Length: 76
Image 1 (cartoon, rainbow, N blue to C red):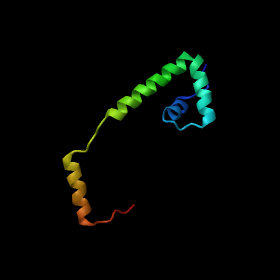
Image 2: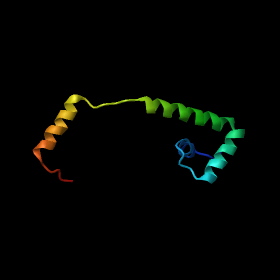
Image 3: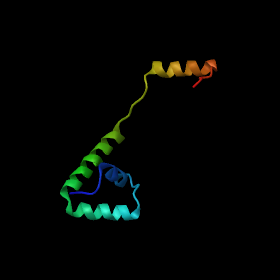
């Protein structure tokens, strides 16, 4: 059973772990196939997300520009 959460693996994947955490995860990856599988799923998801390109509709952009041109302040 792994002591690492999906959040720990995400931090590892994005190279945001401490050197100690990195070493511990890498050691666990050598012997824990389920942890390797979980990391592989996260790596695939990251690759797919990185490939996505989303842009707003032209209508939305024009509405934002039109609103910005009015100079109205938004109250919170």
